[in-house]
Image (cartoon, rainbow, N blue to C red; front, top):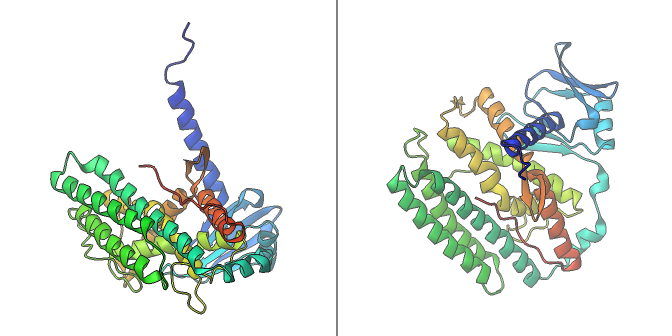
Length: 358
């Protein structure tokens, strides 16, 4: 006898999604109002603007605090409670540049840093290849995701998608099969540059009828809407990877793919590559294609655009997905991947990069 209830699975799925959404909302505190003051009161963080209470969040539920404007103040007690509870606080300026993170100094481990410093070039090459392979394959999977929805309605875009998928797949295999030679970075970065040309050409075609005028990828100082949104989203991602690197007791300045630079967290730049397409590109493209009210004002994203984009990126970081048989938040995947990199460095364990499903 069949005892299944029609629609039960869908109802349970909806309830699960709603539960995860509410959990994410309670775990993330985002403040973007100049003049806001954050303090501790009876187990809560309270936010006041001109002495008026505008928000209240339970400390026990918080996992992360993001401050998106100048002129936001925190009491020393609020900082102390966050450090004690291992709640990171990230500071960004109005352009989306990550300025600082407050974390406990317990994240530093001299033994792990020493293992990084002594890692031989052939091992660095293996790790760099796997990171870059993960980046390109996640670009492929993102194109497959959009191709699935656009292939029938837009034949020209469908062909562009197939061409990009084929070219990027071949480049990913070249990366995977590259033999070691010293210095190794030039070879890998040349392949990455070829992949970038193919990937962003497809994105340009994808957005051609969305009135976005995306011509090419531009990093620092971008004044067009699409590039500015990407850069802002990447800054939020950098902060989360930075925290994962410190939590894994790794030296953020000792990289394997990017050339090390004084005062730059180049290992963070390395690990970010795995997650760019699936955590930021996908979100920004979707926002543009939904024709949301997005705008540039005085050469930077408008206040409302920054708030909308930050909320969307943080929602993505808190979204659950299956990773090696376990349903966890995307942010936890970043943490697990970074911990696996630490094990590769310190214990020669195998590292497999995260590959998104499409």
